[in-house]
Image 1 (cartoon, rainbow, N blue to C red):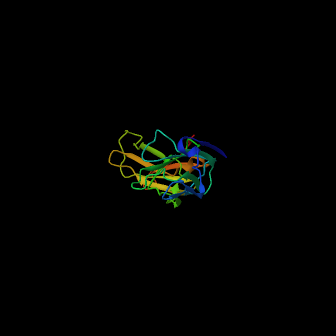
Image 2 (image 1 turned 120 degrees about the vertical axis):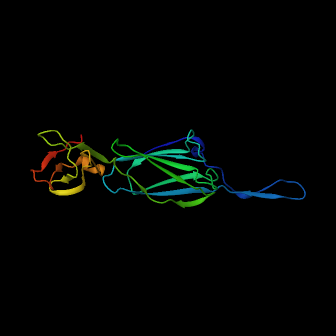
Length: 206
């Protein structure tokens, strides 16, 4: 695991367990204690999982100054420790930016309201691949006229992933989860509801 730190996250405030006296009359004593914020962010992977993920933590809406940056293997949760008092406790202006170290995955922003000190468990964040979009138009071979209402589907071998129909201009658009980019065999099938023989094309998403 590679951890880089910057800003106020580099230092943890001192602790003074003993009472501090001012040596004046009347005698006044003060005790200083610096707490710590422990943040837990559960991570979910509905499909594929990247190898590594980078996390950048910001406070009070200031994205020009990183509290802490962490690069770690993709796990089921992200845990980070911050000094007391660095987070906005009034508004959800604090931010964790999640960058999967794989261009096929979508970066995620997690906004949250902070606490002064203690443990904070955030709602789970989903780490997903960029969806795959397949679109096109369907025409009749003999005169290039558009065909409306043609059933179109994307299949993994013979299993249907998603399906739809061409519109009045013959146009269709289908979207499937990004993990199918790594599937060995995905094909486009059009015209199963027509009197013509269905058209089938194997797709290459690389």
